Amino acid sequence: MANDHPLFIYRYLDRANPRGDSPGFRVRAHAAFPGEDSLQSQVWKELRAEAGIQVETSQWGVYWQEFFRKAPMNEVLTSITVTFGVLRGHGVNRSKQYLAAIARALADEHMGFRIDDNGIIHYAVDEVFEGERSSTLAVLNAPVLAVSRCAYEAAYQYLDQRPPDTKAAVRSIFEAIEIVARQLNPKSRNLHANLCRETLRDQYLTACQGDAVEMRVWAGMFDSMALWVQAMHEYRHGQVDNIAPPSEEFAVYILSSGSAYLRLIGELAVRVGVQPAP
Image (cartoon, rainbow, N blue to C red; front, side, top):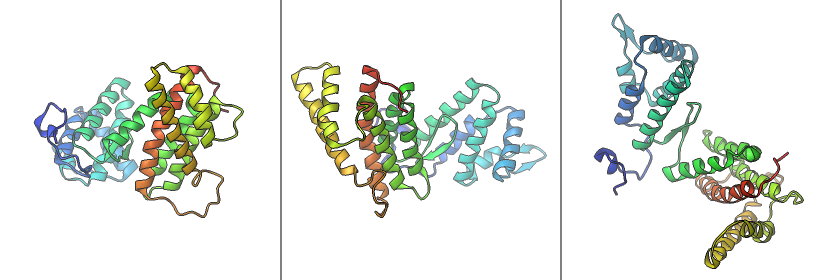
C-alpha cells in the first residue's frame, strides 16, 4: 500500500512489520556521520572507551564506511548515540541536525527503533504507537503537568526494557492519568469510573465548544474512559501483587488507549488552569 512519501523507494515500502536492519538505513547513518577528522577521531575514542567498540583503522584512516556497512546493528545504533554526544559538545544546531537526519532515516526505513531528544535509541512498536506517544508528550510539556509526564515517560521506559516490565508499564500509564484527574478534582482520592463518567465529563463539556451532536459524542468518550478505568483497577498500584505480568501486546494496547485519554484530560487541565501536582 502506498503512503505519502515523495520518494518511490519509500512510498511503496512494505510497512507490515518494523525492520531490525536495513542497508538503506546503514548508508544514511554513514551519510549523516560528521566528516571532520577531529570529530571522527573523538567518536572513535569514545566508542572504544565507553562501549568497547573497536572500529578498524589503517595508515589511511578509520574504516567508517565498512563499519556502517558491516558492523552488528547494535554497534551501529550505539555509535549514533555516541556521535550525538560528541556533536552536542560542539553546538546545539549541529547535534539537532544530526538527530533529525537519524530520526528521518529510522522512520523512512521503517526501522523498529526510535531516537529520543538525547540521542538515545529505543525499541519502537509502530508509527501509530509512536505518533500517539509524541502527541501526548506535546500536551504534557505544559509545566503544570510535569508530574504526570514523569509517570507517562516511565511507562514507556518500562516497556522499552528487555524483557519489558509490562506490569509496571500499565500501572504507570494509569498513574499518569490519575495524577491529572486529581489535579482537576483535588478532593478526589483516586481515579474511578464515576469520576470519569460524571465529573470529568461535565468539566470537559463545560469547557469545550461544539454542537449538540459533538457534545453527545464527547460524553460517550468519557463513558468509554470510565470502562477503561474500571477494567484497569485490576493492575493499579496498591492491588495484591500476585497477578502475572500482562502480555506485551496487552501493554501496547493499554499505553495506546491510555494515551488518548491522557491527552483528553491533559488538554482540559491546561485549558481550565490547574495547580501543579504535589
